[in-house]
Image (cartoon, rainbow, N blue to C red; front, side):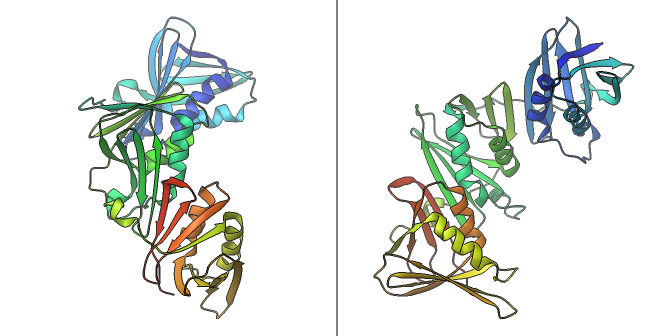
Length: 367
């Protein structure tokens, strides 16, 4: 039975859209497979890891109706290894999928489509709205680096997504730093707060393009759905109570300095070379007209950089993890950044001048 006949890229492109969530090793072998369904001239590809499900469509030829699952990575690797303009065919022969390309033949094992687990779509109390792919991608990029990884506080291993009025807010924290960004919506959907899992956020960021095409978003108390570019992306949510981010963001830090983002990145990167490998601490020494950045390590090696700044307040000596500082600086694009400080025991607040839509808070460390 013929599933597909056409150019390599017309099959590889949708396959790559769904393959990102497929785990190489899984307790359920079928989850390493992709479900391929042909219904007349429509070819549907579906992959899932039980928490996330991605579906995409391509064109097929013929009238047959057939469904099968096959190893996602193997199929992808074979297609990738072929020249771009190659014509390929997929044919189901005796429970094996045969891929033909020129004079090459590849026979792959299959598992029955009826055994493939699908996520059930829920439409309980839905909040619906749309946003451009570009805007959603930018919002995720501004905060996703501050998500926790495998934290015992499972609700930190993800991103808080909030609709409030005609605002879309995204917040992440790992307990040491917090990133907050907001964008405007053209409508005011019903208010909702959900926590997207870390893997969902990273995969969604990878799939979104810098285009003005819309992403249709449907949020329910247990599920998030995103539709864009012929892709339907469904994700379970993290069930938990996210920290009160508004309490974490400082309001009245009196020591404010404006800095060149690129200059600060370069100074921090140089000083970071001689930090303690485990704790990665640097000291920021503020004095009249100057910001000194100092690091040292267990071998008694030291590094110091100095940046001229417009500052006339009292001196301050405060320590931070240099990775947390570099993370924010490399993920915003504006050339000037504002740093708000209070004292050696208070968090630092990074903002973009004349922009209320982004805030980054980082806790101090003792060095």
